[in-house]
Length: 393
Image (cartoon, rainbow, N blue to C red; front, side, top):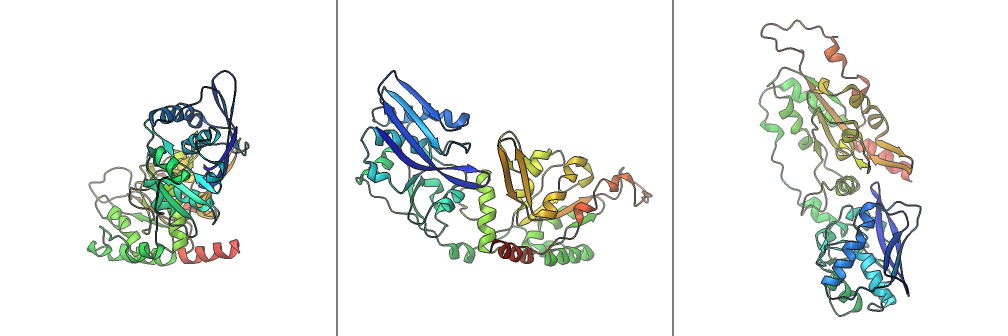
């Protein structure tokens, strides 16, 4: 018998609906997954088999073929486990095919049948149509419920999901109110008023915050450059709902979203170490992931000891600062990550520890390592958000 179940897979920070087709036929026992799956998806065969057996369901000793359509999209991650398991149960006539129509099932299965959390739940919720029902791990249900018009049900175990689809288990949908998130913003631990003195530096940061400008702070060690930079997000404009959702999507896909924070309402602050690689700062890797410039989207990227960063790493900042996004091109396709941020760089005025009056020249090679193009004036957050809205229209 052939069964079809809806699921979703991430491509960059976007999610695409996937048709999980399960065919069970006679023949020697075999379990194969086709449709351009990665290693994690192929490993789902063992997770699904053990989860079904350990929760009391019969795993058929037949020829099982799972097709993930469309086949042109590479499927990554373990979020397809739940849909594959439900597809097998539909093909075995344990679940009626009518009960899975319009239901998007996403979740990772443990060997004992627990439904574990996934990444990118917010993007998955945005990919669903208004008339679809989304079955998600309980830990991710609050995150996806932020999207208006999407009904999200929290799932804890595989038997609970089967009972809900068969109508024997009653579940309440997860409710989330965007206005509540913005009315009860978390308090900041760092306060800009904590900084005493440094009036010129504070004034410069206030001007940069008002206009969305990039800034280079030059000063001796211990002068308060890092302390000032950490408190800059507290005086930036509050995030709009569109900005908060887009920022949360990037952090959710990267697995950087803290437990209990279904929507980020505070502008992010990222301070990578100077030994970071190109892929760590800009994004990329064997499995492409957003870099620090994307994690700082709609927030602040702070480069302390900026001349210590490798030159190719600093030069890689030019495209994100000019375009507001990062494009990663691979043989399988291109990915685009948002990267609109304020760049705050800090450096010492000299190379060596000067015990006397510093005589280093202003155009020394130490200072020239910081590209002036990387510190070009930027637009304000409000102006950039308004221009994006006009482009989308």
